[in-house]
Length: 390
Image (cartoon, rainbow, N blue to C red; front, side, top):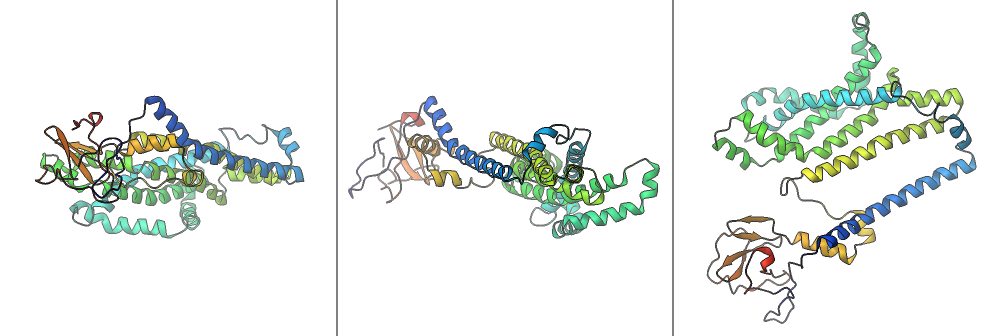
């Protein structure tokens, strides 16, 4: 059945909804994109205002000494890069980079050590690697920190000869061992999410195992796990405060000393909270933007539902029009088949387009007069989508 852009009246008298809205102009698309991000920005603004109002209330009732903060700023409340802020960042970045390098091969072992894609070499290391991952994920980091600390203390005389700070390197080692276990699971999920058909096709073309991994599995797997890896970095940065229990001088110890020295602990911990927010929020938003730019359509899981801001505040008509047009675009164009998201495809046959079930490359006899099922929108054959109209 072929329907025009305004819809047609089927024999049963029910109006058929159009499936392809009129394509909006570039200005309309930009305006719709701005309106689409407006609810989330509004919700963020409301949260910020609530937090500021809460802090102002604490300052008004005397819980927070605003005068003291202004007098001591920035000498007392601005840790330099050579101090605790640098130590926290160094602990996080160094442990994350080392963990990344070690977690990639461990993720390969976890992904290809068992199952139909079992690799003989990966199978040999699968049991110990799996045991290590479960041990790290099944015990608190606080316990792991003390175990590593006491092991390092036993080797302290030899480390002191090298001039190393035993406590600092014990904290770095504990963070590294912890993030290796979590990152290896992230890589395992990313590698297993790559379709097995692509791997088999690459092998059929003559690529060897390492070549398939470097050119097929690893690039696509990294795109899928960009956000989980970012979450792991943020979690590791926040977990670096726990190493303060073994006398590592970082942000938490700095805030604690500030409270003891000046008698204002609340102000000190509010400041380190601000430092964490100033680093974590821009990092999270930036990586989210990069992930959207590098996302491969159809790779991995389907996008989730609407955000809370959309459900709570709704959408404008302009936003609905732009989003509706983008969702109506064909998600595949192969051998002349234009597949749409409603489960049907358009196949150009002669001077008109036929409606056939998606995935069928050739129309069968009788498809031209096939009725549209109730509740499904009819497709529209328009020159805009590359198909001639009747």
